[in-house]
Image (cartoon, rainbow, N blue to C red):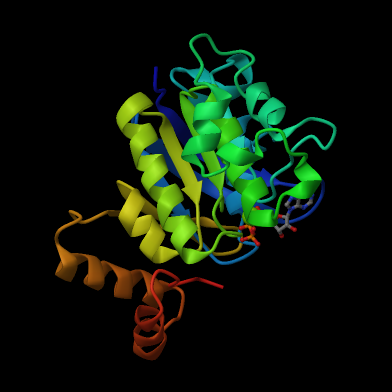
Length: 254
Ligand SMILES: Nc1ncnc2c1ncn2[C@@H]1O[C@H](COP(=O)(O)OP(=O)(O)OP(=O)(O)O)[C@@H](O)[C@H]1O
Ligand SMILES: [Mg+2]
């Protein structure tokens, strides 16, 4: 069952260093898909790791459903910025690992077929390209039919076409299991295509700068306006916008 994810006044600092995140208030409705955008180093992965329970907030609270994240064990899956496959297991065995705690989990072979790796089930991780390994990591995350799906630039290593295909796959997964999804991406077009809402992190320490509802998929004019506004937030002017438009779907924030 999809879970509500709530961040209430969340702050994070590492050791005695300056705060990385401060005063983050954000709630994801069960089954909602939120894209998280922000400049490199602003704290997006840190925020994702807080939701995953891999880091502890130093202020405020992260809740899954009604309970603090440290007290619950939801079916939460993470795709990290790098694939993190176990090198001593075959690709299929890596994917099966994602399903080990889940009843009625999806079949590894079906998932590998869906991410275009049907023929690589018996391969070893070192035999995969970066993009193939990242797709295997996505299959592993989906294998447990997670309630909460956390994606940290999962498609960064993929070519534009494969990226589009993986986006379609995520939409299929949503239609089937509706996980509450938080996806970090640098790609504004990808965010506009996939997400219900777009959240912009900015500042030092980073806070939520803006939250936008994604316009309906068919409203090209509204999508173009929001795209320009978001790129403007990151100091990318009309030229960068036009340039990015000439090379869809890679309107990337550096
Ligand atoms: N374990 C850690 N110890 C100390 N500092 C950390 C740790 N993890 C992250 N940081 C710092 O927190 C800040 C935010 O890092 P984070 O990885 O969350 O950024 P990001 O927005 O995901 O960047 P990118 O887009 O490049 O992936 C950086 O200054 C980073 O050095
Ligand atoms: Mg990151």
